Length: 320
Image (cartoon, rainbow, N blue to C red; front, side, top):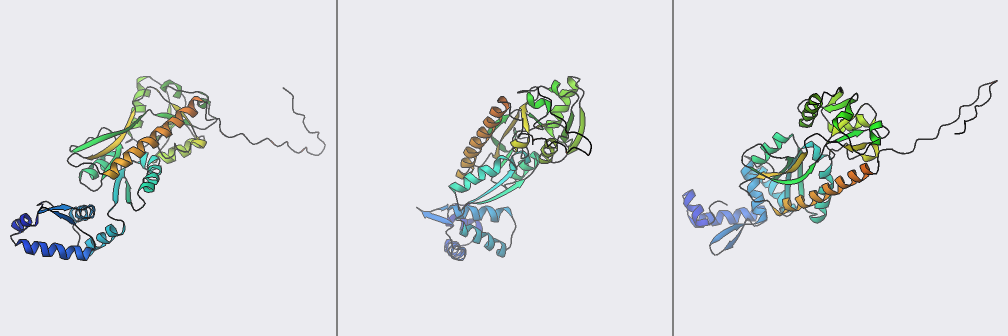
């Protein structure tokens, strides 16, 4: 892979070129696919060869482990995509995008792991994944980024909450409201608390949790309001929540991170296209519903009249 020819590989390994060629031919027979295409004395790796090389380089596996990987590569034609994503995207937009990607590449094998932003960057930098979906800009050296979408934080309320009647909100509107937040390490929470303090808005932290999905479930139950990323998995359940744009907080920028010294693959480029389209469609739907006053929720069930007790007359409903 690194030498580019059997002759140079033989020089590095202090053996003969025919010995390298025989060993390579034997390995290809055992694996069941070609590792290289031979042209004008050069060896160019095939997609299957690159996939096998990445796996063998990444982990110190024994022969049995490498043969298992080879079977997986042979089974799906070498198409494999490893993604690390932050929770805000992994539970919401990513599943829909992967469904579309698998429609384009039915034989594709996908690995999706969920980490916090710092761990996403570290895993991608150490070549454990082909790409990462995280909050931009990346803080780790050696990574490049590709913007996906920029969103404003939104206030999530129960459908019949008083704030759901508004089409847009400011930090001042949160005065007196019980607020549901993520744990103290969350960047959006830190920004919100700083803005509340700067504007001297009195708001009470009523509940905190480690899951953005749980935050939205608690909001839907009417236990408080929350400031959320509109792409979180819980916020995607629009029929149970009212989402309203919130001014005064910094926008959230999501994007891809990948090693600076490696070109993006065709699979990663296609995933970027799909995710951009999915994110734009989702955000447009949220803003349209917000502008239309979405959030009134389903109709309330009709009240049933109480059965009159013995000796009493049923009350007549007063006409308006």
